[in-house]
Each structure stands twice: as structure tokens, then as C-alpha cells.
Amino acid sequence: MLVFVFDLGAVTCAWIGGFLLRFNLAIPDDYLTLAVNSLPWVVPIYAVSFLASGLYRGLLRFASLPDLFRIARAATLGGATVALAAYLMQLELPVPRSVIILSPLLLVIGMGGARAVYRQWRDGQSVAGSGTGRPLVIIGAGEAAVALIRELQRAGEWRVVGLLDDDATKHRRELLGHRVLGSLEELPRLYSEFEVRDAIIAMPEADARTRRQAATACLRAGIRGMTVPALADLMNGRVTLSSVRNLNLDDLLGREAVSIDTANVQQMISGRVVMVTGAAGSIGSEICRQLARFQPSKLVFFDHNEFGLYRLVEEFGSDFPGVAFEAVIGDVKDDRRVASVLRQFGPSVVFHAAAYKHVPMMEGTNAWEAVLNNTLGTMTLSAAAVQAGVERFVLVSTDKAVNPTNVMGASKRLAELVCQAQQRLATSTRFVVVRFGNVVGSAGSVIPKFQEQIAKGGPLTVTHPDMKRYFMSIPEASLLVLQAATMGTSGQIFVLEMGEAIPIVELARNMIRLSGHAPEEIGIEFTGLRPGEKLEEELLSDREATTATPHPKLRVAMASPPPAALLERLAELFNDSDRDSELDAHGLLREFVPEFQPDRYATQTERADAMRDVSSAAHAAALKGAVG
View 1 (cartoon, helix red, strand yellow):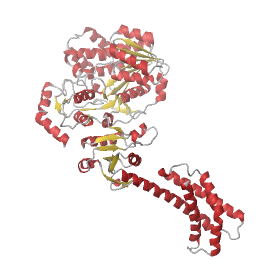
View 2 (view 1 turned 90 degrees about the horizontal axis):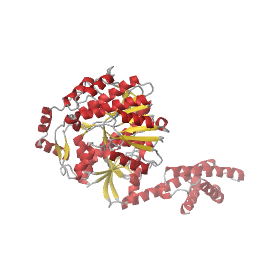
View 3 (view 1 turned 180 degrees about the vertical axis):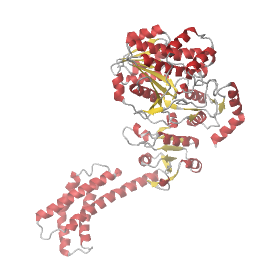
View 4 (view 1 turned 90 degrees about the vertical axis):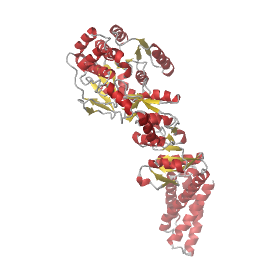
């Protein structure tokens, strides 16, 4: 009501002001009489216009640009109505046309300006009242930062010291009274000079790499980082304090959110029986969860891990009550069991995720078991799938199959060749191979190991200071496997876009910082390369190139074709070979995977040199660099 009364007063001032401007501040007596006598009908007309335009639906405290547009519409409506009324009343002394035009303009300036001043005053009160909160820096000087500052001012818990942005054109500018202090390089100075211990990364529109750089900069400066999720994750598109969360490992890996063609995946899965081997594993179980979204008629979980299957059954019973499933104990190397299961359930699609994947463990004594499980298992399952008329067969492979230096990688490369060879024999089965790197949190991966070591107080064990790996999340990898399954034809090998390789030692240091410790509090020990390990994985072999696909995160590897008699020759070797001999396993792999070079990176001499190079003195220097 007070605002309404104020606006009516503004109408009076604007109306008289229009006459003043028309007559150069000296209104003749007759026009002054006209101006005053016309107020009893001019003011009500504008009052009705204000109410009809919904001018008082918003709160004055949060007046913004849309409110100014409403004021302009109301003033225009009122001015037009006043002009029409003046014309219809046939006044003895007509209202000057310039007054009809000037008075609405003055009204917009008066009403809009008053609201802006009030808003600025209230925001200034909030700033003044938040000067005693915890010092905070905001990274990013865009619209998200503006919205966040307003939220912080209302909360009163934080005191915004300033903003940081790598865009040099924004430096020394101000947002809502807070200066942009510089780039991310200023974080250590803010830590020491202003005792800033907290930062919020407010860049939801930035790409994952930029957000990762900001997150890493916070950790290196010893500042607790928080972040606003990416715009794709903000359902309502509005930045609020409730959407701010602490940094996690995904922020440090810098992976973009993945989207897939759900319509094609739905068409492939909906109403059909789908079988997943290795269903109890980290990748296999996530593929099962993603498949459940697309309403298959039945999911068949196939694994020889009894306890893992039991846990998966318990999960699906509670989380996916509407999905029919069957848990089947079995070994992919058992041709009779595999054929029986395929005949019984008749799956349309098979996702083959069963594999031995721990690189050092699959060397030496276990070499033949890796070949049998990863290669013979694939050969047995794929042959049975062709015989049973399975429509799609999807092999989950690995980047370790590229220029392999270990039995695990070579056996998976040979499994890829088996699928390509089976494609030649298949008339109705489509084979697809999907190759990707390490997934965050998968069983046996380095990240859960680091988390356990941090929980015990350290030290964290890293094999070599130059070790690098590609990482992606389990859901991302699983979704892209489903996407590739819809796109693949004729034994194609899909390579997932893995981003940048991340140094393992840097990942270890960031995980230490993320846990709230400094690198010098929890040590890092370098243990030397283990059997079969590379310093850096590769996504393509020396003889491969890729072609693009419609999906930005999937490419097709132009891999060399398998030998003509591959399947027959493998069958002979698996029947006749000495399965207790590591050399025999290496011989089989070398015959079909010529790029297999087990001594390429990790001979005994190189491992000894690596351990000698990362002695205690080198370790101390590395830690000193990390602290610096």
C-alpha cells in the first residue's frame, strides 16, 4: 500500500514535471490551472493502469529488470489512456502533446529509479552486516557469482573478500561492490594476507577442464574448495547456497557430463531379454543399473562370484522392483553352461564384461588363467551367442589392449580379434567392442586403494613419479557402452574419449588435500613399476587411426583385421597347450598379437632403475615441490 501511494505521488510529480519541461520551468497561469485541475482524473487513470499491469505482484526488496519493464508498460498504458481521455473531454485548453509524451517518461524514471535506490540500499545493508563472517573468495565473475553473492549476503555467515577470474578484462572491476582481484594465481596470496580458507567455484557454464583447474588450484593453495554444479546439473537453472557442495574426486578429474541417445537405447533394450556377464563386477553391475532404466523384459546376471551376485540381487530387489531379473552362476569358459543359459533365456543383447583385469596379478603364475578367462571365455561366449542367434554382442575392452605390455592387455586385445573373427561367421549377430581406460571406484583401481591408505594415515604408494592414467566415472563408462552398442556394426572397435591423462602422483597429492591433510602430513612412497605396467596407457596402437561418430565421446578405431584362421588356430592351442607355463601363454599371445611387448617398459633392469631413481632423496624433493 505504501508503494502504491508513493507511485501515485510520482504520477503527480511526473504530470506537473511534464508541464515544467514543456514551458522551460515557467508555466503560464492558465496551463498551471489546467495541470492542477486535471490531476483528479489523471491520477486515477494511472492507478488503474498500475493495478491492471500487475505492478505489485513482486517484492520491492527484490526489484529487478522485469519490474522496470512492467513499470514501462503501465506508464505507457496510463499515458495513452490519459491522451484518449483528454481528447474525448474536449477541454477548453488542450493538454500539450509534449506533456502527454514527457510525463510517462518522467514517471518511469521516477518509479524505476526509486526502486533501484531502495534495492541498492538494502543490498548495502546486507554487505555492511556481513563484514564479520568467515572470509571467502568466489572463483568466477559471471551471472552465477552475482546470484551467489546475493545469497551469501542474506545468509550472513560469509564475508566475500573478492572474486577471481582468469578473464583479464574483468580484473579490477566490481560485482555488487566486490572487486575482481585477479586470476587463480592470487589464491596463495589471499590465503596468507586475508586468511581465506574457503572458496566457492561459481562457474556452472564453464567446461569441465576449467572447473578442474580451479578445483586443483584451491587444493594446492590449501583452501577448502566448494563448487556450484554444472548448469546441466542445476534443474532449476538457479544458483543457491543449497546447490553448493564440497569438492569431490570427480571435480579433480574434470569429466563433462555424458548424454546419450536414449531413444535408440530404449529401442534396443525395451521389452527384450538382456544378459550381462561379469554382472557382479563394478562395470557389469553399473551396466545392469543403467539397463534397468530402459524397461527390459528380463535382465540375466551371469557371474561365477556367488556373493557378488547375491549383493546385486538384493540391490535390484529393493531399488528396481519393477525389473524382472535372473541371477545365474556360471563360468564363461564353460561352453555347456553358456550354451544352456543362452538357450534357456534367449537374450537379444549380451554385454560381455567378465574379465580378469588386475595387471600385476595376471603376470607370472596366473598368466594362463588370464588368457583362458579373457580370451577363451570370449571365444566360448561369442560362439554360443552366434549359435543362439543373439542380435548384439558387446565386448567391454580396455586401453591396456593397445600396444600391450602385459598379459591382461594382450589377452583382451586377442579377445577383440576373436569378436572380429566371429563377425565374419555371423549372419544375424552384430559384434561391438568398446575400449576405455580406468574408471573411478572400480574394484582393484588405484583410487579406493588411496582412500584406504589415507584412512590409515598413509603413506600412499605410487609406482613411479611419471605414471599417468586416463580416468572416467563408472556411470559415464557404462552409458557410453550402451550408446556404442546402438551404433556399432561389423565388429567395430569403439574408443571412448578419455580426456587428459592424469599423473598418478598428482592424483595422490590432491586426494590427500581433499581429505583435509597437507601433503607433508601423509607421505607418498614410490615403489617402482610392477610387472607388466606402462608409465602411460595408450588409446590407439601404432597401426590404428580413428574416425568420428555422431557422438562426441565415441570414435571408431581402424584396427587391423584378425588372421583368417584365428578361431581354428586358437581352438587347437587351447586344447594342446601346457596351461602351467607362463612362457607358453606369452608364446600364444605373441603369435596373434604382434604388438605385445612384455619387456617394453617393465624389464627387471628398468624396474630396478625406477626404484633407484625414486630413492628417499628424490621423494623428499618431490614432496618439497608439492608443498611449494
